[in-house]
Picture 1 (tube, rainbow, N blue to C red):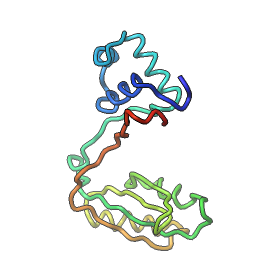
Picture 2: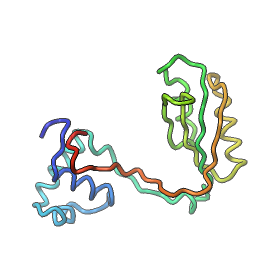
Picture 3: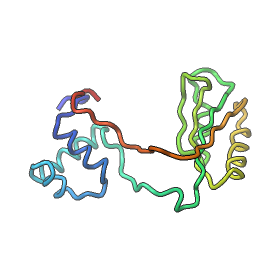
Length: 159
């Protein structure tokens, strides 16, 4: 297998694992019609090559009292590409994602908190970072789709 390519069997295995990271190797083997030992070797190769970077449980934020999601543009005074601000933002527990962008602001940050008061406290943490110049937040009213799943197009063998 080429370091940058995956075949159809790899793609099937990745789709299965993406849907259910707790599925047994034997069940994957049954679904793809291969021997469990062959599937286990494929999974290990996908892990070694970095196609699979980990396994995690997906938690329900509402059940945990984290009902408010916000996306915040963070304007920073730092050299382009230094990521100093992004690295500091990533240390804040309420921050789920930090993206360095080519858009309106250098950073787009996803935050999950209990309520608007908690959002205000979190934004105060942003403001305590010396390079943060300004923020602009958008509060999510309803989430139509949210996934960490990666689309695995059958027609595209490049990864």
